[in-house]
Amino acid sequence: MATYSADRIPGSKSGLGEGSLWDERTKTFLWLDVFENRIMQFDPADQSIEEHFMPKVVTYIGKRQSGGFIVALGDCLATLDKDFLPLEFTPLEVDPEAARTNDGNIDSKGNLWIGTADIVENVGAGDLRRIDPKLDSTTFRNQIYISNGIDWSPDGTVMYYIDSATRKISRYRFDSSTGKIIEALPEFDVSDVTGVPDGMCTDSAGNLWVAFWGSGQVRNYSSTGELLNVVHCPSALTTCCSFGGDDLQTLFITSAQTTYDPQYSFGDDADGMCFQVKVSAQGKLDQFFKG
Image (cartoon, rainbow, N blue to C red):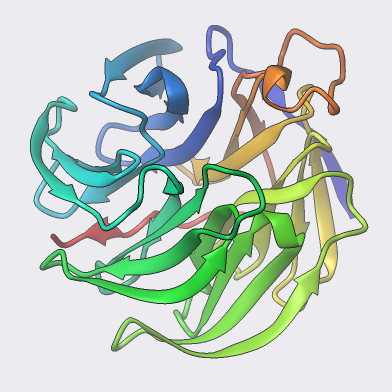
């Protein structure tokens, strides 16, 4: 097992950093400063960081096949052009007093999977739903607490999903031809790790890379749940991770400031920053939303 130490990206501090995405079209790393309503953009070539403001809380960003992006804004979806300017808003059936959008991902057929999370802690008002290219919504799971990491095996036959409060990584047999969950598979119990599993991605070999809120780690698991590698970050509240760079071997990691969960702290000024580390694994590019 290899152990890695991630380096800070200067100037990348956010409040609640989430929603990591590598955009191969511009060769930039994107992430979200959720409650500051900002999409952040880091260019590794010149080390520059730009910010793009949204009209409300922003919890997810993905690429659109027709250009630009799709984002989740708490109670709606919005399409953006390539300059991050909003084009169209689509309301979601979300009770703003009970839940808001959270993490998401796009399957191989171009469907957006978006989860919602409790606004009032431990109520279970969240869900997991699929938004197809026609923007029709189908709910696949209810009574979710904190909907987070979503990704698939490279062949699209297994879907991985995290409801952070359960401290487990759920697995489902998945039909990529229809974009549907077929049945639940045994979960990975990660309750032995400090904190809770948060954002996640899979690499080109089908292994999982899971950010743990509370431990300052991204832990790499095989498709059978074996711990393979660990990445250490100088911030306790690691939130999301994505592979990027020309060779897709740089792991980009987001974090939150410890004001969001003071019980976890390394006493370091790196809280809320993004990190990067070169690893031996190779990632895969995110899919495009076809809507």
